Amino acid sequence: MQNKGLSQNLVLKELESRLRNDFAYDSGKIIGSMCTCPHPLARKVYNRFLDINLGDSGLFPAVVKLEKETIHMLGTLLSNLEASGHIVTGGTEANTLALWAAKKLSKKKQCEVIMPASAHYSFDKAADLLGLRIVRVGLNDGFQVDVEAVKKAVNLNTIAIVGIAGTTGLGVVDPISELSKIAVENDLYLHVDAAFGGFVLSFLKELGFNVSDFDFALPGVCSITIDPHKMGLAPIPAGGILFRNERLRKAVAWNVSYLAGGETEQATFVGTRSGTSVIAVWALLKHLGREGYKRIVRRCMRLTEKLAEEIPKIKGLDIVTEPTMNIVGLKSEVFDIRQIAKELRFRKWAVSLFPNYIRIVVMPHVRKHHIERFIEDLKDIIDKLGG
Image (cartoon, rainbow, N blue to C red; front, side):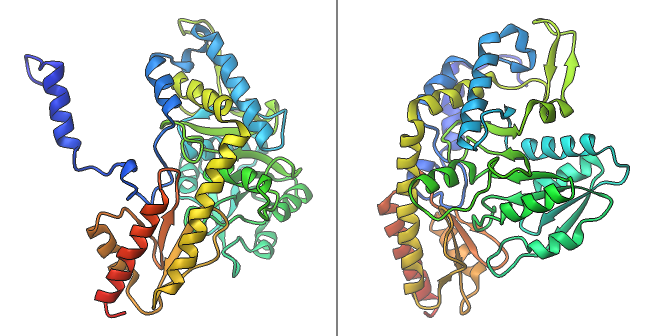
Protein backbone atom coordinates (compact mmCIF):
# COMPACT_ATOMS: atom_id res chain seq x y z
CA MET A 1 0.00 0.00 0.00
CA GLN A 2 1.37 3.38 -1.02
CA ASN A 3 1.66 6.29 1.41
CA LYS A 4 -0.35 8.82 -0.56
CA GLY A 5 -3.63 7.77 -2.12
CA LEU A 6 -4.60 8.31 -5.75
CA SER A 7 -7.55 10.38 -6.92
CA GLN A 8 -10.80 8.57 -7.67
CA ASN A 9 -10.42 9.37 -11.37
CA LEU A 10 -6.95 7.82 -11.51
CA VAL A 11 -8.12 4.70 -9.67
CA LEU A 12 -11.10 4.29 -11.99
CA LYS A 13 -8.96 4.87 -15.05
CA GLU A 14 -6.48 2.21 -13.95
CA LEU A 15 -9.27 -0.27 -13.24
CA GLU A 16 -10.78 0.31 -16.66
CA SER A 17 -7.38 -0.25 -18.23
CA ARG A 18 -6.70 -3.42 -16.29
CA LEU A 19 -10.12 -4.96 -16.85
CA ARG A 20 -10.69 -3.98 -20.48
CA ASN A 21 -9.65 -7.38 -21.85
CA ASP A 22 -11.90 -9.40 -19.56
CA PHE A 23 -14.96 -11.07 -21.09
CA ALA A 24 -18.25 -9.17 -20.99
CA TYR A 25 -21.68 -10.77 -20.95
CA ASP A 26 -23.14 -8.25 -23.38
CA SER A 27 -20.68 -9.43 -26.04
CA GLY A 28 -22.74 -12.62 -26.27
CA LYS A 29 -19.54 -14.66 -26.33
CA ILE A 30 -19.84 -16.00 -22.79
CA ILE A 31 -21.73 -19.18 -23.63
CA GLY A 32 -20.26 -21.51 -21.04
CA SER A 33 -21.32 -19.74 -17.85
CA MET A 34 -24.42 -20.24 -15.72
CA CYS A 35 -24.38 -16.58 -14.71
CA THR A 36 -25.54 -13.58 -16.71
CA CYS A 37 -25.95 -9.81 -16.68
CA PRO A 38 -27.96 -8.70 -13.66
CA HIS A 39 -31.33 -7.17 -14.49
CA PRO A 40 -31.22 -3.32 -14.66
CA LEU A 41 -33.59 -3.05 -11.69
CA ALA A 42 -31.30 -5.30 -9.63
CA ARG A 43 -28.35 -3.04 -10.45
CA LYS A 44 -30.24 0.01 -9.17
CA VAL A 45 -31.30 -1.74 -5.99
CA TYR A 46 -27.82 -3.10 -5.36
CA ASN A 47 -26.17 0.30 -5.62
CA ARG A 48 -28.74 1.91 -3.35
CA PHE A 49 -28.63 -0.52 -0.41
CA LEU A 50 -24.99 -1.61 -0.23
CA ASP A 51 -24.48 -1.18 3.51
CA ILE A 52 -26.97 -3.72 4.88
CA ASN A 53 -25.55 -6.65 6.87
CA LEU A 54 -28.18 -9.28 7.62
CA GLY A 55 -25.70 -10.99 9.92
CA ASP A 56 -26.77 -8.27 12.39
CA SER A 57 -30.43 -8.63 11.56
CA GLY A 58 -31.68 -6.62 14.55
CA LEU A 59 -30.46 -3.47 12.83
CA PHE A 60 -32.53 -4.13 9.71
CA PRO A 61 -35.91 -5.64 10.68
CA ALA A 62 -37.54 -4.47 7.45
CA VAL A 63 -34.98 -6.41 5.39
CA VAL A 64 -35.55 -9.49 7.57
CA LYS A 65 -39.22 -9.26 6.61
CA LEU A 66 -38.28 -8.88 2.94
CA GLU A 67 -36.18 -12.04 3.17
CA LYS A 68 -39.10 -13.98 4.62
CA GLU A 69 -41.31 -12.70 1.81
CA THR A 70 -38.65 -13.66 -0.73
CA ILE A 71 -38.41 -17.19 0.66
CA HIS A 72 -42.21 -17.40 0.61
CA MET A 73 -42.26 -16.41 -3.07
CA LEU A 74 -39.54 -18.95 -3.89
CA GLY A 75 -41.37 -21.54 -1.82
CA THR A 76 -44.54 -20.88 -3.82
CA LEU A 77 -42.54 -21.43 -7.00
CA LEU A 78 -41.27 -24.71 -5.54
CA SER A 79 -44.68 -25.98 -4.34
CA ASN A 80 -44.38 -25.18 -0.65
CA LEU A 81 -46.03 -22.23 1.08
CA GLU A 82 -44.44 -23.29 4.40
CA ALA A 83 -40.84 -23.27 3.17
CA SER A 84 -38.22 -21.70 5.42
CA GLY A 85 -34.72 -20.59 4.47
CA HIS A 86 -32.36 -17.84 3.45
CA ILE A 87 -30.73 -16.02 0.56
CA VAL A 88 -27.09 -17.11 0.80
CA THR A 89 -23.85 -16.69 -1.12
CA GLY A 90 -24.58 -19.39 -3.69
CA GLY A 91 -25.09 -23.07 -4.37
CA THR A 92 -21.98 -24.15 -2.48
CA GLU A 93 -23.18 -22.61 0.78
CA ALA A 94 -26.74 -23.86 0.21
CA ASN A 95 -25.61 -27.44 -0.44
CA THR A 96 -23.34 -27.33 2.61
CA LEU A 97 -26.18 -26.10 4.82
CA ALA A 98 -28.41 -28.91 3.55
CA LEU A 99 -25.89 -31.63 4.37
CA TRP A 100 -25.13 -29.97 7.70
CA ALA A 101 -28.83 -30.11 8.58
CA ALA A 102 -29.02 -33.74 7.47
CA LYS A 103 -26.08 -34.68 9.69
CA LYS A 104 -27.39 -32.85 12.77
CA LEU A 105 -30.84 -34.36 12.38
CA SER A 106 -29.55 -37.91 11.92
CA LYS A 107 -27.39 -38.08 15.08
CA LYS A 108 -25.43 -40.99 13.57
CA LYS A 109 -21.73 -41.37 14.27
CA GLN A 110 -20.77 -42.62 10.81
CA CYS A 111 -22.61 -40.70 8.13
CA GLU A 112 -22.88 -41.50 4.44
CA VAL A 113 -24.57 -39.48 1.71
CA ILE A 114 -25.63 -41.06 -1.57
CA MET A 115 -25.39 -38.90 -4.67
CA PRO A 116 -24.97 -39.28 -8.44
CA ALA A 117 -21.66 -39.09 -10.25
CA SER A 118 -23.03 -35.90 -11.83
CA ALA A 119 -23.30 -34.06 -8.50
CA HIS A 120 -21.52 -30.70 -8.21
CA TYR A 121 -18.08 -30.60 -6.59
CA SER A 122 -19.49 -28.39 -3.82
CA PHE A 123 -20.75 -31.59 -2.20
CA ASP A 124 -17.17 -32.84 -1.94
CA LYS A 125 -16.25 -29.62 -0.15
CA ALA A 126 -19.22 -29.97 2.17
CA ALA A 127 -18.44 -33.61 2.94
CA ASP A 128 -14.82 -32.77 3.72
CA LEU A 129 -15.88 -30.00 6.11
CA LEU A 130 -18.60 -32.05 7.79
CA GLY A 131 -16.80 -35.39 8.02
CA LEU A 132 -19.26 -37.17 5.73
CA ARG A 133 -18.55 -40.09 3.42
CA ILE A 134 -19.86 -39.64 -0.09
CA VAL A 135 -21.19 -42.70 -1.89
CA ARG A 136 -21.32 -41.88 -5.58
CA VAL A 137 -23.52 -43.99 -7.84
CA GLY A 138 -23.53 -44.22 -11.61
CA LEU A 139 -25.85 -42.79 -14.21
CA ASN A 140 -28.28 -44.41 -16.63
CA ASP A 141 -28.26 -43.96 -20.40
CA GLY A 142 -30.12 -40.68 -20.01
CA PHE A 143 -27.36 -39.27 -17.75
CA GLN A 144 -29.69 -39.45 -14.73
CA VAL A 145 -28.82 -41.11 -11.45
CA ASP A 146 -29.32 -44.90 -11.51
CA VAL A 147 -32.23 -45.39 -9.10
CA GLU A 148 -31.55 -49.09 -8.58
CA ALA A 149 -27.96 -48.27 -7.66
CA VAL A 150 -29.25 -45.75 -5.11
CA LYS A 151 -31.47 -48.41 -3.54
CA LYS A 152 -28.55 -50.82 -3.26
CA ALA A 153 -26.31 -48.16 -1.73
CA VAL A 154 -28.64 -47.45 1.22
CA ASN A 155 -27.31 -48.89 4.48
CA LEU A 156 -27.40 -48.24 8.23
CA ASN A 157 -24.93 -45.35 7.89
CA THR A 158 -26.88 -43.53 5.19
CA ILE A 159 -28.27 -40.20 6.35
CA ALA A 160 -29.17 -38.49 3.09
CA ILE A 161 -29.69 -38.73 -0.65
CA VAL A 162 -28.89 -35.96 -3.10
CA GLY A 163 -30.72 -35.53 -6.39
CA ILE A 164 -29.89 -33.00 -9.12
CA ALA A 165 -32.54 -30.95 -10.89
CA GLY A 166 -30.38 -29.58 -13.68
CA THR A 167 -26.92 -31.14 -13.72
CA THR A 168 -23.93 -28.87 -14.13
CA GLY A 169 -22.80 -30.58 -17.31
CA LEU A 170 -25.96 -31.24 -19.30
CA GLY A 171 -28.88 -29.79 -17.37
CA VAL A 172 -30.39 -33.24 -16.85
CA VAL A 173 -32.97 -33.78 -14.11
CA ASP A 174 -32.67 -36.87 -11.93
CA PRO A 175 -35.85 -38.91 -11.25
CA ILE A 176 -36.52 -37.04 -8.03
CA SER A 177 -39.92 -38.73 -7.55
CA GLU A 178 -38.17 -42.10 -7.32
CA LEU A 179 -35.56 -40.72 -4.94
CA SER A 180 -38.39 -39.29 -2.84
CA LYS A 181 -39.92 -42.75 -2.47
CA ILE A 182 -36.60 -44.21 -1.39
CA ALA A 183 -36.09 -41.40 1.12
CA VAL A 184 -39.56 -41.81 2.64
CA GLU A 185 -39.31 -45.59 2.84
CA ASN A 186 -35.93 -45.40 4.60
CA ASP A 187 -36.53 -42.25 6.66
CA LEU A 188 -33.70 -40.41 4.92
CA TYR A 189 -33.08 -36.74 4.22
CA LEU A 190 -33.47 -35.86 0.52
CA HIS A 191 -31.80 -32.72 -0.79
CA VAL A 192 -32.38 -31.46 -4.33
CA ASP A 193 -29.71 -29.34 -5.95
CA ALA A 194 -31.70 -27.09 -8.30
CA ALA A 195 -29.14 -24.28 -8.22
CA PHE A 196 -29.53 -23.79 -11.97
CA GLY A 197 -32.78 -25.61 -12.67
CA GLY A 198 -34.87 -23.95 -10.00
CA PHE A 199 -35.45 -20.82 -12.07
CA VAL A 200 -36.01 -22.82 -15.26
CA LEU A 201 -37.95 -26.02 -14.61
CA SER A 202 -40.95 -24.48 -12.86
CA PHE A 203 -41.48 -22.09 -15.76
CA LEU A 204 -40.89 -24.79 -18.36
CA LYS A 205 -43.75 -26.76 -16.86
CA GLU A 206 -46.02 -23.71 -17.14
CA LEU A 207 -44.89 -23.29 -20.77
CA GLY A 208 -46.05 -26.79 -21.59
CA PHE A 209 -42.71 -28.62 -21.59
CA ASN A 210 -42.61 -32.17 -20.27
CA VAL A 211 -41.02 -31.63 -16.87
CA SER A 212 -41.15 -34.23 -14.11
CA ASP A 213 -41.75 -33.24 -10.48
CA PHE A 214 -38.59 -32.20 -8.67
CA ASP A 215 -39.66 -29.94 -5.80
CA PHE A 216 -41.54 -29.93 -2.48
CA ALA A 217 -44.60 -31.41 -4.19
CA LEU A 218 -42.76 -34.69 -3.53
CA PRO A 219 -43.10 -35.72 0.14
CA GLY A 220 -39.50 -36.89 0.58
CA VAL A 221 -37.85 -33.62 -0.46
CA CYS A 222 -36.42 -31.91 2.64
CA SER A 223 -34.47 -29.03 1.10
CA ILE A 224 -33.76 -27.39 -2.23
CA THR A 225 -30.90 -25.24 -3.51
CA ILE A 226 -31.97 -22.52 -5.94
CA ASP A 227 -29.70 -19.73 -7.19
CA PRO A 228 -31.32 -16.40 -8.13
CA HIS A 229 -27.94 -15.18 -9.42
CA LYS A 230 -28.19 -17.66 -12.29
CA MET A 231 -31.42 -17.66 -14.31
CA GLY A 232 -33.03 -15.40 -11.70
CA LEU A 233 -30.95 -12.47 -13.08
CA ALA A 234 -29.92 -11.30 -9.59
CA PRO A 235 -26.46 -9.84 -8.90
CA ILE A 236 -23.81 -12.11 -7.41
CA PRO A 237 -23.90 -13.27 -4.62
CA ALA A 238 -27.49 -14.49 -4.40
CA GLY A 239 -28.00 -18.19 -3.80
CA GLY A 240 -30.91 -19.73 -1.98
CA ILE A 241 -31.54 -22.57 0.49
CA LEU A 242 -35.11 -23.59 1.16
CA PHE A 243 -36.05 -26.13 3.81
CA ARG A 244 -39.42 -27.85 3.86
CA ASN A 245 -40.26 -26.28 7.20
CA GLU A 246 -38.92 -24.18 10.04
CA ARG A 247 -37.91 -27.24 12.09
CA LEU A 248 -35.39 -28.31 9.47
CA ARG A 249 -33.97 -24.80 9.14
CA LYS A 250 -33.47 -24.56 12.88
CA ALA A 251 -31.23 -27.65 12.78
CA VAL A 252 -28.41 -25.33 11.69
CA ALA A 253 -29.46 -22.20 13.61
CA TRP A 254 -27.19 -20.51 16.17
CA ASN A 255 -27.94 -17.77 18.65
CA VAL A 256 -25.62 -14.75 18.64
CA SER A 257 -25.87 -12.32 21.55
CA TYR A 258 -23.19 -9.64 21.12
CA LEU A 259 -24.40 -7.81 18.00
CA ALA A 260 -25.34 -4.13 17.88
CA GLY A 261 -28.89 -4.97 16.91
CA GLY A 262 -29.30 -7.29 19.89
CA GLU A 263 -29.49 -11.06 20.19
CA THR A 264 -30.25 -12.76 16.91
CA GLU A 265 -30.34 -16.15 15.23
CA GLN A 266 -28.18 -17.15 12.28
CA ALA A 267 -28.83 -20.22 10.14
CA THR A 268 -26.35 -19.51 7.38
CA PHE A 269 -22.75 -20.60 7.00
CA VAL A 270 -21.41 -17.05 6.89
CA GLY A 271 -21.98 -14.49 9.62
CA THR A 272 -21.80 -11.18 7.79
CA ARG A 273 -24.05 -11.46 4.75
CA SER A 274 -25.49 -9.16 2.16
CA GLY A 275 -28.92 -7.71 2.80
CA THR A 276 -28.57 -6.11 -0.61
CA SER A 277 -28.83 -9.52 -2.25
CA VAL A 278 -32.10 -10.16 -0.46
CA ILE A 279 -33.54 -6.82 -1.56
CA ALA A 280 -32.45 -7.37 -5.17
CA VAL A 281 -34.05 -10.83 -5.36
CA TRP A 282 -37.25 -9.54 -3.73
CA ALA A 283 -37.38 -6.67 -6.23
CA LEU A 284 -36.90 -8.97 -9.23
CA LEU A 285 -39.53 -11.46 -8.11
CA LYS A 286 -41.99 -8.62 -7.61
CA HIS A 287 -41.09 -6.88 -10.88
CA LEU A 288 -40.83 -9.82 -13.28
CA GLY A 289 -43.37 -12.17 -11.74
CA ARG A 290 -44.10 -15.55 -13.27
CA GLU A 291 -44.97 -14.08 -16.66
CA GLY A 292 -41.70 -12.16 -16.88
CA TYR A 293 -39.60 -15.20 -16.04
CA LYS A 294 -41.62 -17.34 -18.43
CA ARG A 295 -40.79 -14.95 -21.27
CA ILE A 296 -37.08 -15.13 -20.41
CA VAL A 297 -37.08 -18.92 -20.20
CA ARG A 298 -39.12 -19.27 -23.41
CA ARG A 299 -36.63 -17.15 -25.37
CA CYS A 300 -33.64 -19.06 -23.97
CA MET A 301 -35.27 -22.37 -24.89
CA ARG A 302 -36.02 -21.25 -28.45
CA LEU A 303 -32.36 -20.40 -28.96
CA THR A 304 -31.35 -23.66 -27.28
CA GLU A 305 -33.54 -25.63 -29.67
CA LYS A 306 -32.03 -23.78 -32.63
CA LEU A 307 -28.53 -24.59 -31.41
CA ALA A 308 -29.42 -28.25 -30.84
CA GLU A 309 -30.82 -28.46 -34.37
CA GLU A 310 -27.86 -26.81 -36.09
CA ILE A 311 -24.97 -28.62 -34.40
CA PRO A 312 -25.75 -32.12 -35.82
CA LYS A 313 -25.89 -30.60 -39.32
CA ILE A 314 -22.15 -29.96 -39.10
CA LYS A 315 -20.27 -33.02 -40.31
CA GLY A 316 -18.51 -34.79 -37.44
CA LEU A 317 -20.45 -33.05 -34.67
CA ASP A 318 -23.46 -34.03 -32.59
CA ILE A 319 -25.18 -33.23 -29.32
CA VAL A 320 -24.71 -35.43 -26.27
CA THR A 321 -28.44 -35.62 -25.51
CA GLU A 322 -31.60 -33.70 -26.26
CA PRO A 323 -31.57 -30.64 -23.98
CA THR A 324 -33.84 -30.67 -20.93
CA MET A 325 -33.30 -26.97 -20.36
CA ASN A 326 -31.08 -24.26 -21.83
CA ILE A 327 -27.87 -26.31 -21.80
CA VAL A 328 -26.41 -28.16 -24.80
CA GLY A 329 -23.56 -30.67 -24.83
CA LEU A 330 -21.51 -30.66 -28.05
CA LYS A 331 -19.56 -33.84 -28.83
CA SER A 332 -17.61 -35.41 -31.69
CA GLU A 333 -16.63 -38.96 -32.59
CA VAL A 334 -14.36 -37.61 -35.33
CA PHE A 335 -12.48 -34.62 -33.92
CA ASP A 336 -10.65 -33.96 -30.68
CA ILE A 337 -13.16 -32.04 -28.59
CA ARG A 338 -10.32 -30.32 -26.75
CA GLN A 339 -8.98 -28.96 -30.02
CA ILE A 340 -12.42 -27.63 -30.94
CA ALA A 341 -12.68 -25.92 -27.56
CA LYS A 342 -9.20 -24.44 -28.02
CA GLU A 343 -10.16 -23.02 -31.42
CA LEU A 344 -13.41 -21.60 -30.06
CA ARG A 345 -11.59 -19.91 -27.23
CA PHE A 346 -9.04 -18.52 -29.70
CA ARG A 347 -12.02 -16.83 -31.34
CA LYS A 348 -13.05 -15.46 -27.95
CA TRP A 349 -15.93 -17.86 -27.32
CA ALA A 350 -16.01 -18.64 -23.59
CA VAL A 351 -17.13 -22.28 -23.56
CA SER A 352 -16.97 -24.94 -20.85
CA LEU A 353 -14.87 -28.01 -21.58
CA PHE A 354 -15.86 -31.30 -19.95
CA PRO A 355 -13.92 -34.56 -20.47
CA ASN A 356 -15.97 -35.70 -23.47
CA TYR A 357 -17.94 -32.68 -24.60
CA ILE A 358 -18.24 -28.90 -24.69
CA ARG A 359 -21.02 -27.35 -22.61
CA ILE A 360 -22.95 -24.41 -24.02
CA VAL A 361 -25.32 -22.50 -21.73
CA VAL A 362 -27.86 -20.25 -23.45
CA MET A 363 -28.33 -17.54 -20.83
CA PRO A 364 -30.52 -14.41 -21.15
CA HIS A 365 -27.61 -12.32 -22.45
CA VAL A 366 -27.28 -14.61 -25.49
CA ARG A 367 -29.19 -13.46 -28.58
CA LYS A 368 -30.14 -15.05 -31.91
CA HIS A 369 -27.32 -13.36 -33.81
CA HIS A 370 -24.82 -14.65 -31.24
CA ILE A 371 -25.98 -18.22 -31.82
CA GLU A 372 -25.81 -17.73 -35.59
CA ARG A 373 -22.27 -16.33 -35.33
CA PHE A 374 -21.25 -19.21 -33.08
CA ILE A 375 -22.54 -21.79 -35.59
CA GLU A 376 -20.67 -20.06 -38.41
CA ASP A 377 -17.43 -20.07 -36.42
CA LEU A 378 -17.99 -23.71 -35.49
CA LYS A 379 -18.44 -24.65 -39.17
CA ASP A 380 -15.28 -22.78 -40.10
CA ILE A 381 -13.30 -24.51 -37.35
CA ILE A 382 -14.46 -27.95 -38.48
CA ASP A 383 -13.62 -27.15 -42.11
CA LYS A 384 -10.09 -26.20 -41.09
CA LEU A 385 -9.76 -29.33 -38.96
CA GLY A 386 -10.60 -31.44 -42.00
CA GLY A 387 -14.38 -31.80 -41.78
